Image 1: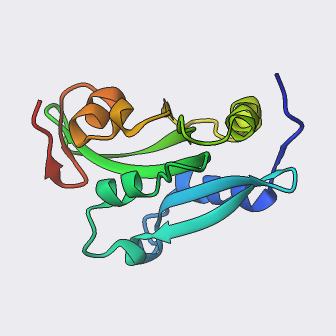
Image 2: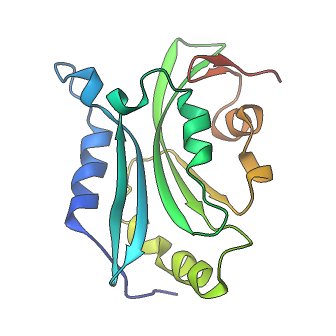
Image 3: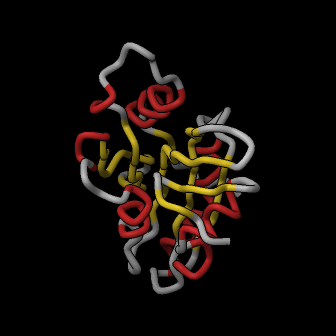
Amino acid sequence: MASGVQVDDQVKDIINDMKVVKSDADASERIRLVVLEIKDGYIKVEHIYKEKDLTGEDVFKFFINLMDKEKCRYLLYDCHFETKESSKKEELVFVMWAPETSPIKSKMQYASSKDSIKKVLTGIKHELQMNDLSDYGTRDQFAEKICKNVIKVEGHPVGH
């Protein structure tokens, strides 16, 4: 079911920037988290967090804390993790956050508009739908969902 909601051009540009990280780019300017909202018939950027904004933060905990219990949102998370088999990985995770406590109309709008945003999310490996922090709200649960044999998420150990 399509909602008629369109993806704002700024969102498309940001997604492309996040997918193609240039080796000569300033690491502190790298986009790590983007919060998207539906407003005026468009999926728009509500907030962008760059690496420099998150200095000293546990990025995973910061990401989890962005999930407001009253508001549906889409989140795009540049997740850094390590597996037993390889060194560090950096992969984009798309999350549809639709908490049980948000208004039913909002939940329906985000669910029916997900296809619009998915069309511009080509090449993103991980997609999660979360309705409650008990879904994947711990580092262990999240790690298990995104990849097998994850040993660290954002530099912090995962305790399977």
